[in-house]
Length: 188
Image (cartoon, rainbow, N blue to C red; front, top):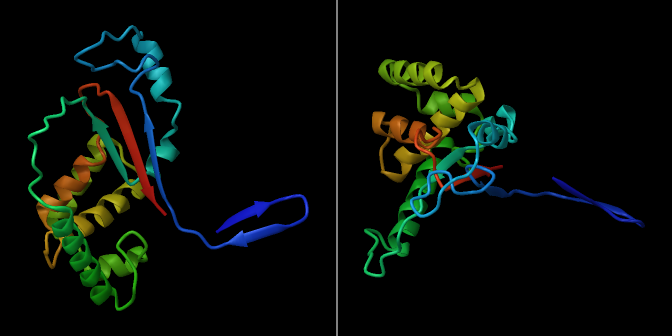
């Protein structure tokens, strides 16, 4: 819900949104760039990147570290927008059928998600190992499972696949090599 307060009234509306944020990798913005030299000290970089606290990071579904690329006018995507739209529509239909209601993996109660799509023992071991290594919270682990379920839905898989777990985990890791931008996204 969002509440708007003005001098003469206060109104509350239902709301749903996707938050997309971006930040530079350092104060000057050139850390990891192939075209420009970064002038920031490691202490400045660390302080800058810590401006976004751990609890805020935990609430973000996807963390992408992007590298600058040279745009190639001859680049052709493997999938058209229509093909992607159809794949997303099919994934949504799978979710509606699974949960018997119009709800997505991002919103379904976690117990319902795990009852309908339990992880295998090996997937649980993989996730536990990654969690210890990356120092992820329980909240992040749940986000990985939700994201893996969605990735499997997009691939047309009835169960969460090992590949989907790895892909979801990859979308949560900070790059080991500095990047030009960090993109943050959260669906609420």
